[in-house]
Image 1: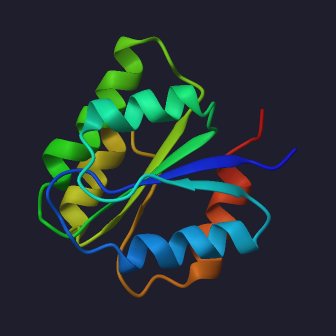
Image 2: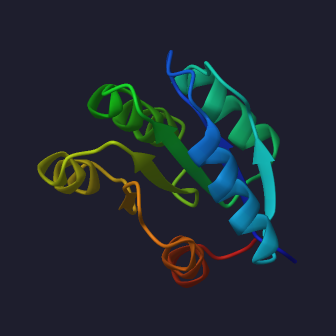
Length: 130
Protein backbone atom coordinates (compact mmCIF):
# COMPACT_ATOMS: atom_id res chain seq x y z
CA UNK A 1 0.00 0.00 0.00
CA UNK A 2 1.51 3.38 -0.93
CA UNK A 3 2.15 6.04 1.65
CA UNK A 4 -0.56 8.71 1.82
CA UNK A 5 0.89 12.20 2.10
CA UNK A 6 -0.98 15.45 2.52
CA UNK A 7 0.74 18.53 1.09
CA UNK A 8 -0.64 21.73 2.55
CA UNK A 9 -0.10 25.49 2.31
CA UNK A 10 -0.96 27.00 5.70
CA UNK A 11 -1.65 30.68 6.14
CA UNK A 12 -1.93 33.48 3.65
CA UNK A 13 1.05 32.58 1.47
CA UNK A 14 -0.15 32.54 -2.14
CA UNK A 15 2.89 30.89 -3.75
CA UNK A 16 2.47 27.16 -4.26
CA UNK A 17 4.85 26.24 -7.08
CA UNK A 18 7.31 24.58 -4.68
CA UNK A 19 4.55 22.64 -2.95
CA UNK A 20 3.30 21.38 -6.30
CA UNK A 21 6.80 20.37 -7.41
CA UNK A 22 7.31 18.42 -4.18
CA UNK A 23 3.85 16.86 -4.46
CA UNK A 24 4.62 15.66 -7.99
CA UNK A 25 8.02 14.27 -6.96
CA UNK A 26 6.44 12.38 -4.07
CA UNK A 27 3.74 11.04 -6.38
CA UNK A 28 6.31 9.98 -8.96
CA UNK A 29 8.19 8.17 -6.17
CA UNK A 30 5.14 5.96 -5.59
CA UNK A 31 3.28 7.84 -2.88
CA UNK A 32 -0.37 8.82 -2.93
CA UNK A 33 -0.47 12.61 -2.56
CA UNK A 34 -3.36 14.84 -1.58
CA UNK A 35 -2.84 18.58 -2.14
CA UNK A 36 -5.14 20.88 -0.16
CA UNK A 37 -4.54 24.08 -2.08
CA UNK A 38 -3.80 27.55 -0.76
CA UNK A 39 -4.81 29.36 2.42
CA UNK A 40 -5.45 26.46 4.79
CA UNK A 41 -5.64 26.92 8.54
CA UNK A 42 -3.76 24.49 10.78
CA UNK A 43 -7.15 23.13 11.93
CA UNK A 44 -8.26 22.52 8.34
CA UNK A 45 -4.99 20.75 7.59
CA UNK A 46 -5.30 18.44 10.59
CA UNK A 47 -8.97 17.75 9.85
CA UNK A 48 -8.12 16.82 6.26
CA UNK A 49 -5.20 14.65 7.40
CA UNK A 50 -7.47 12.71 9.73
CA UNK A 51 -10.26 12.43 7.16
CA UNK A 52 -7.83 11.23 4.47
CA UNK A 53 -6.03 8.85 6.88
CA UNK A 54 -2.60 10.11 5.85
CA UNK A 55 0.79 8.88 6.95
CA UNK A 56 2.47 12.28 6.71
CA UNK A 57 1.79 15.99 6.29
CA UNK A 58 4.12 18.15 4.26
CA UNK A 59 3.76 21.87 4.98
CA UNK A 60 5.03 24.66 2.76
CA UNK A 61 5.36 28.35 3.49
CA UNK A 62 7.26 31.25 2.04
CA UNK A 63 5.56 33.92 4.14
CA UNK A 64 7.77 33.80 7.22
CA UNK A 65 5.00 32.40 9.41
CA UNK A 66 6.62 28.97 9.79
CA UNK A 67 7.34 29.45 13.51
CA UNK A 68 3.62 29.92 14.14
CA UNK A 69 1.91 27.73 11.55
CA UNK A 70 4.11 24.63 11.56
CA UNK A 71 4.03 24.14 15.36
CA UNK A 72 0.27 24.77 15.36
CA UNK A 73 -0.25 21.72 13.13
CA UNK A 74 1.99 19.56 15.35
CA UNK A 75 0.20 20.79 18.49
CA UNK A 76 -3.26 20.10 17.04
CA UNK A 77 -2.21 16.54 16.21
CA UNK A 78 -0.86 16.07 19.74
CA UNK A 79 -4.05 17.50 21.25
CA UNK A 80 -5.96 14.73 19.52
CA UNK A 81 -3.40 12.08 20.62
CA UNK A 82 -2.34 11.47 17.03
CA UNK A 83 1.29 10.43 17.06
CA UNK A 84 1.54 8.35 13.91
CA UNK A 85 1.41 11.18 11.34
CA UNK A 86 4.87 12.51 10.49
CA UNK A 87 5.00 16.26 9.82
CA UNK A 88 7.69 17.80 7.64
CA UNK A 89 8.00 21.21 6.08
CA UNK A 90 9.66 23.36 3.53
CA UNK A 91 10.09 26.89 2.35
CA UNK A 92 12.08 29.92 3.37
CA UNK A 93 13.15 28.75 6.82
CA UNK A 94 16.42 29.96 8.38
CA UNK A 95 18.67 27.22 9.80
CA UNK A 96 18.17 28.32 13.42
CA UNK A 97 14.39 28.20 12.96
CA UNK A 98 14.63 24.77 11.32
CA UNK A 99 16.40 23.40 14.39
CA UNK A 100 13.78 24.88 16.71
CA UNK A 101 10.98 23.42 14.57
CA UNK A 102 12.55 19.97 14.76
CA UNK A 103 12.75 20.32 18.55
CA UNK A 104 9.02 21.13 18.49
CA UNK A 105 8.15 17.94 16.61
CA UNK A 106 8.75 18.57 12.91
CA UNK A 107 10.43 15.59 11.26
CA UNK A 108 12.44 17.60 8.73
CA UNK A 109 12.68 21.01 7.10
CA UNK A 110 13.62 21.36 3.43
CA UNK A 111 14.66 24.71 2.00
CA UNK A 112 14.68 25.94 -1.60
CA UNK A 113 17.30 24.16 -3.67
CA UNK A 114 17.01 20.87 -1.79
CA UNK A 115 17.27 18.09 -4.38
CA UNK A 116 13.90 16.38 -4.82
CA UNK A 117 15.62 13.01 -4.37
CA UNK A 118 16.59 14.14 -0.88
CA UNK A 119 12.96 14.89 -0.03
CA UNK A 120 11.61 11.65 -1.49
CA UNK A 121 14.43 9.66 0.12
CA UNK A 122 13.73 11.19 3.51
CA UNK A 123 10.03 10.35 3.18
CA UNK A 124 10.86 6.78 2.18
CA UNK A 125 13.15 6.39 5.22
CA UNK A 126 10.99 8.20 7.78
CA UNK A 127 7.34 7.70 6.85
CA UNK A 128 5.82 4.27 7.01
CA UNK A 129 2.60 3.42 5.27
CA UNK A 130 -0.27 2.13 7.32
